Every structure is written in structure tokens, then in C-alpha cells.
Amino acid sequence: LNQADLRSLSELVLGPDQWFSAGDGSSIWPTAAFGTPLLKDLDLTLDFRADSLLVDETTAIANPRAEVRLTPSLLRLDGLNGSFAGGRLDGSLSLRRSDAEAAVSGRVKLEKADLRQLAWRPSDRAVAAGTLDLFLEFEGAGRSISAIVTGLSGGGTFAMDKGDFRGLNPQAFPLVTRAVDAGLDLRDEKIREVFISHMAAGTLPFERVDGTLTLVGGRLSARNVVVDSEKAEIFGSAEVDLGTYDLDADFSLKIDPGEDAVTGAEPQVGLLFQGPVEAPRRRVDVGPFTAYLTLRAFEQEVERVEKLQAEILERDRLVRELKQQREAKGRRERAAQAAALAAEEERLRLEESQSQEGQSAPTPQNESTPAQETNAAPPLQQSEARQQSGAVQPFAERIRAVLGSPDPETTQSVPDSAPQAKPSNALPPLDPPVSIEDLITREVGGGPLILPGAPQ
Image (cartoon, rainbow, N blue to C red; front, side, top):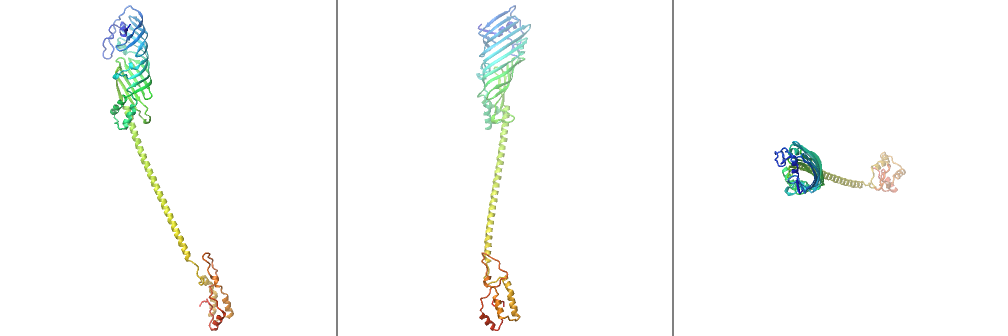
């Protein structure tokens, strides 16, 4: 065949015009009850080959190959294979009719499909690139096509390799951070406007994305999806309601802040996708990022205040040190001045002492000290006493008395350079020598003899 339509084949079992009846508004799928099978008393097994097998108006499997089993109540495609979205498709499908109800089951395995052909295309550009591997098993039952789809259950896995997400520029985080440092207002509206404009200007490359698929009640969900990327991290969940073909996804995009890290918050935004799978609406929640920027600004202000306080404390410390240095210098100067003054006073005292010692020079030889006068007094007093008593001594005794007086030269002072103690029995110096003739003459004169140097 050139082209086959899977919907038309299913009507052989479900009844005529099942895919062209309207839904009830709660589902895009037909809600009409199944009709009478179109085949009676027929059991065929065919080797099916075609250039294209239509799944719906826009989805087709290229070059399908399968073994088809067809009866009035059964349509089965075993060993189905072909090409889909640039990859290889393998699977099977079974549709079994039981009175008013029908049951469907199947398996799909897709390898190396092109994500650009599967992702939605805003502005005619796919939001993702890379390859997709998918495995899914499903089953369901109901009295209408809508009932079967909304009752599907099953599960599987998926993996995306070596691709990128368009419109997710991780450099938007540091760019907005720098803008906030430059004065950007920390309001959600301003942050969102600037962040979205920067985020739309780049892509986020990834190495691999793995996830698990769960199909319950006609809702296909992928939980705890993590995108492996060097520049950023994406994690979250997505769900597709097969009854309405609407997407509801909630992911978070965050980066490593590096030196801009703060305690209690991280630079991240929420990425919310809602609406039809072929064109969902994207909403960016910048609340977590605004909280991070606000906390970062607060920590920067605290750091600035602490730095300013540290500078003030350092300045006060330097002022105190300078004051202490000036006080120490003043003390040293005063001590030096006091030492100089004391040295000057000592010098003056020494000069005055030397001057006083110079003035206390020894007495002349013709002067007698009080001690000499005291020591000389007894013999003179004895002579005077004898003179007063009127006893005239013989001439020889007078000569001996005169000759017994000490030599005047013995009373001379010792030089100042070597002062010595004077003997206690030193006598006053004698007058110049008197000759015997003078003494005889004075005695002949009739009066008492007065020796030179004797007291009058």
C-alpha cells in the first residue's frame, strides 16, 4: 500500500465513524459508544507493508511493516516497525472488542528520534534538540475511544542525549546579578523582565536526560527528571493529560553561584509550562532568584558595614598607637631634658665645689692656727707667770727657754695638693733671732726681759 490509516483499520472492530464523532468538551477524543463491527465471519492474517501509516492527521509512521491479524472482534499488529521522527520505531498493538466494550494494549519502542521533530516550535523554532529514546507499554478499556484513552495505564522510560534547550541561557543569572549590583530595582517585575530577556538569548546544552514514565488514568507523567549539564541544572516533573493533550510541567533551573554564594538561598528560577502539548505557555517564576538577590544584597550590606566598622576600629587603633608614640616620645624628651638639666646642675655643683676648695687655701707661715696658739700657750704662760711673780730667772735659764722653742720653719703649711694633719704640740713661729748682746743690753736696761713672740 502507498498509505494506510490506523484509525480506519480500528473501525473494522469498533464500528463505523468512530473517529469523526465529536467529543463532549472534557476530552478531544470521540465519546460515542462503539457500533457494530464491520466484519463478519472473517479471520485474516496479512503481511502488512506500506509507505506510510497514519496515526492521526499530522502523525505518520514511515515504511511500516507488520503482521496483521483481523477478525470481527480483533485487530492485532505484531512486529510493527518503521521510521518515526527520524528514528526507528518498533512495537505492537492489540484492539479487542467485547460486546459494548473494547480493550486496547500495546508497546512502543523508539530509538534515536529527532527531538526537533517532536518538540513544540514557538516562532517556528524547536525548543529542544538532540536524540530521544523511548519505551512505553500501555493498556486500557472502555465503551468509547475517550473512555479508553482516559483509562490508559502503563509505564516506561525515556532518555535524551547530546542536545540543548533553546531559550534557557544560564548566563542570565550572573548578568542579572551584575545588573542588581549596578542598581537594578529588586522587584519581581523588574527582575523577571531583565532575566527573561537575557535567558531568551542563549541555549542550555546537555549531555543526557533520563527519566521514568508513568501512565495512570490517561495521564503520562515523568517524575524527578534531572538534566545533566555543566553550566546549569534542571530538575522537575512533567505530565501530559492524554484526554485533553495538555502539558503541565514544573521545572527549576539553577546554577552554581561560585563566589556569589549566600547562606539560605540559591540562584534559581521556576519554569512552568501549561497548555496544549503543541504550544504550551511558559511562565518564569523569579521569586527564588529575587529572594537570593535580596539576601545577597543584605549580606553585602552587612559585609560593607562590617568592613567600615573594621576600618573605623583600625583607624582608632592607629590613632591610639600614634598617641602612645607621641606620649612616649614626649616622655623620652622630658627624660632627656631632665637628664641634661641634672647633668648641668651636677657640673655647676662640681664647679662651685672646686671654687670653694680653691678659696680654702693654707694660712701664711707668720700666722698661727688656734691649735698652735693653744699648744704654745703653756710655756709662754709659765714665763709670764714667772715675770708677774717678780722672780727674775737666771740668764742661763732664759737662754735655755729661748732655745727650747720650736723652729719657725716647722710650722709652715703643707702644700694644698697633699694636706697633712698638724702635730698637736706645734708652737707658734719665733721672731727673728736675737743675739746675746741684745739680750744683755735689754737686761742691763733694768727692766724685765721680754722674749720675742711672748705675750705682752
